[in-house]
Image (cartoon, rainbow, N blue to C red; front, side, top):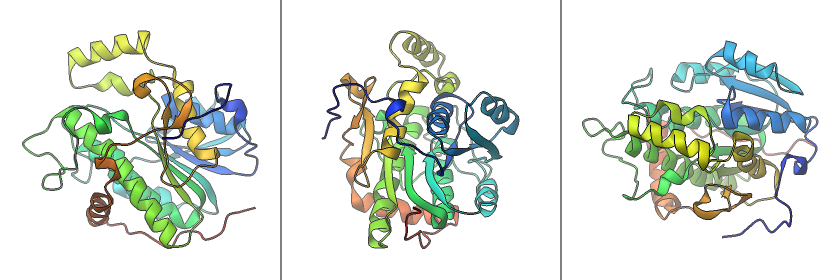
Length: 307
């Protein structure tokens, strides 16, 4: 596991000039997503805030210094994902699959999938494949240390919706394990296709955001509220991890997270994934199942990088 060996903590001032580049950040109206937008726009990129609530997105965008725009995207509705991708014109340098839900009460997406798996994984799976012919540089997908929490998280291939056995934390862990397996198989396919595009994953550590506020358990909400106050780093520090994954010269398939104890805090570094998240057979199986569920297949990716 490689470490960031810089003598000074990596920060947004280390982001290379992004002038002339375009990025899409999902779930960008608050938290780590908005901080990612600010970091990219501050470095000169044109950034699209892909959000479910356009009004909230526009409010967030109005405070960002730089070139930004807001477009509607509901990852819990595959028709919205298709519409977003169909409207895209031109090159897309960076796609940040950032949006997510965490430990929520049992619910379903518009298409009938368990909400956490459907939003965190399937929506981003469809979005990435539909946009891939436009993408020229990288896809950065957010995961979590929850992919390796006690209890050996796994993909429940026999019951992806966890019907009759739903547990909020199990569903969240499954969705974040899926994000890493998706990144693994996406990179394998990009390499096989001769594409220069790289797929990477990142996690923000424990970042104080709104993500924890919808937890299904009152006791966990209380614990998370205290953790946000006394343990967590802020959203801007958490966002350094996907930003590092997007602009540093890292191998495809890399996983970036904080280098501190438990990966809860610290400066961005390459971090380890669990054995389950490194299983190429499970990654291929998940890809096949996801193609069937989302009705989206791996396309011909871009084969050149825009100068």
